[in-house]
Length: 70
Image 1 (tube, helix red, strand yellow):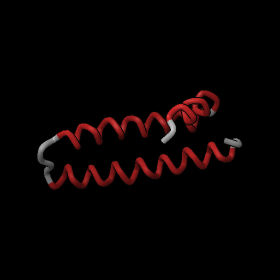
Image 2: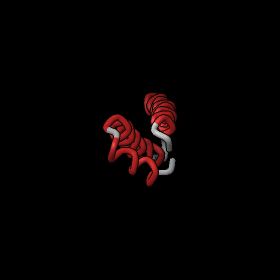
Image 3: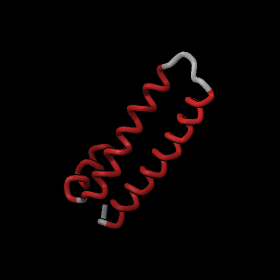
């Protein structure tokens, strides 16, 4: 994800800002899981959900940017 591009659009569009903030929070949570030497079955499921949600957020963010002419 081109964070600088997203940040520019996030300044003007509150929906993009909210989606980007959620994406960043998920990125932090995911990085904490990845650092662990071992994941429980529950943590593995959470990891997969985070990855899917991050991808969906990224797609939505770029869709909104494209609509705005980016």
